[in-house]
Amino acid sequence: MRALLGLLVALPAAADPRFELLSDALPLDHVYSGGWEHFVGGGVAAFNCNGDNLPDLAAAGGTKPLRLFVNRTEGDTIRFDTAPLPEMLGTTGVYPLDLDGDGTLDLAVLRVGANRLLKGDGQCGFKNMTEAWGGAADTAWTTAFTATWESGATRPTLVFGNYVDRDDPDGPFGACDDHQLYRPEGNGWGKAEPISPGYCTLSMLISDWQRSGTPELRISNDRHYYLRGGYEEMWHLSPLTPRTDWPHVSIWGMGIASADLTGDGKPEVMLTSMGDQLLQMNAGDTMRNAPFEMGAAAQRPYTGDDGRPSTGWHAEFGDVDNDGRLDLFIAKGNVDQMPSNAMADPNNLLMQGEDGRFTEAGGVAGIGDPVRSRGGALVDLDGDGRLDLVVSARRAPLKIWHNVTPETGHWLGVELRQENGNTRAVGAWIELRIGDRMQAREVTVGGGHAGGQSGPVHFGLGEASEAELRVIWPDGEVTDWQSVSADQRLTLRRAP
Image (cartoon, rainbow, N blue to C red; front, side, top):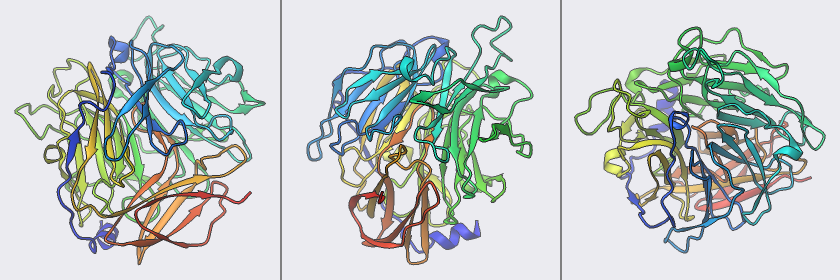
């Protein structure tokens, strides 16, 4: 905590966050629906599918169709139109990434059944390329995804995480399925490498969490189904082997959020669960549970009289008030009718203070929706420099909240481009400094709960009107520090 205090104490407190629910931003009600196979999932993807620099949205539908909403915002009026997608049902999640290295974003769609790889055309049109490319042939119940570009590869390594084996006659309890890792081969992907045993994962993230230049695979697992013997995992990618020295922490793992909170350049991680949400601090060679006093446990509802434990799903760090300190959103909601946990379970917005501790602001911010929330995205939908909020829910409509927080600090949005396949520079680190204060953010694909983003990395700058910036590219090349002015979006292109 001492390092955290030293980093943050210089910044003043901002006004309370405020969000305005936009009831007419979407052209139709989109609901994540279905039976027990859709108690989990419900992810949202935020990405720009047509090059207009406005984030578009794709949302899993469960037994309803996967939907694509194209951003038609004008000024401060946020609104969306629908656009067609290849018809498919049974979707649980969706992640944007450039699968074929052509510079346009594609979609990896998770399903109960065969997953799909959709090629984008740069105009928000998508074509199903799963059969031609390979890399998603399994027909399991998929609930997690992550990807990275390994050294020298022009296409990403894909990892699909599965939940309960629906064909196991002794299930569902104790019947967790294995996972699949696909490495590039030719113009697609080769045969799957199994990750076994599986412990019913609901989130995965490949991250260079030690800043060693060697990313590893983090897997968060739901003990509701693995019952015994399972735990939160870390795997080496090449060769694909589990880390045997990893602490055996067992939780009802639902989602992963990863970001540097202390300013030492190494990311902390939030693992959502039922009851206490588990924040772990980066100790260099392992992760250590944060003390309860940091205020991130968010274990019970903060409104109403339902004192039963909460259920956390999507988690995401983002600087909501642009004060230079990362805040934390957690989507909350009962699995369905689980009597041990709260039924009216509002979403959390945990604001990080000058001392590094988190304080609940979901109620005062206006985002404490007590429905069965699942996926989400903190994303600047109108380009005003404030992170807005998108949240999906089971048996309730997708919602959009506009960030109208007054007196926010300065900001910067940074997006990376390079050639040779990994066009979005997944695996890069962006470092920003203001005086002796440092922020470091990693470009990743994965984490969250069944959905993620591809777009500008958002930095809050507090009162500073300029900062210094550098990029550590995926292969380790480091740029010089450069001065940048606040309140703009930058696209940094690597020289060929």
